[in-house]
Length: 227
Image 1 (tube, one colour):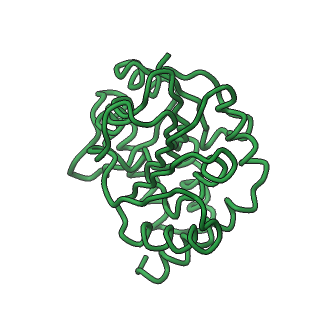
Image 2 (cartoon, one colour; image 1 turned 90 degrees about the horizontal axis):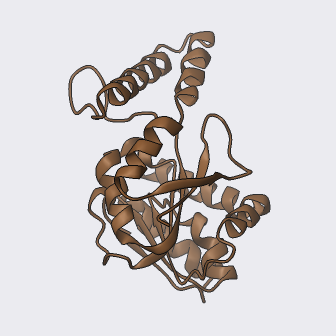
């Protein structure tokens, strides 16, 4: 995907998030009782996941993404739609968060973990999360890639089939050994399951509290806490 196409993708995702009031209400309900003053969105894209918290609750938002386009598009959209919102964008990786320890009482990471070094990224999120903080974490389950594989087979799309097969192989290796592939015939991208995720979170002093009502089997969305 070239720069122009990716920027259009970010804008589309922003509009989808902006118009999804059900998701916004579910996000706010997930942190009911928590005083949200600083929110970090890891793998933020244009930062639409922060909108309910920075607009409704007046929190300070930090959007982090490895893509340069995410910062520029995110700043532009927030400036034009919510000029009073306190939001900054940082280009960086989840495996090395440029924030102080225990500095955020809410972290969001939606469909970004599959593309990261899971252990390092979760360790960094646990480090940055304040005591009794909340992590809203959405993953790609194996079902997501099985669906991609079957869809590719039905459409005779060899590239889609190959992609899904490689991620499934990488995810299986990850689940058997606890290590993500770095080279060879597989890819770094992996699926997660509740079983593996619980193990990874437990190592960082985190635990799944609940699954959000707007979750789905292919991409479950969890409420995670360090309490």
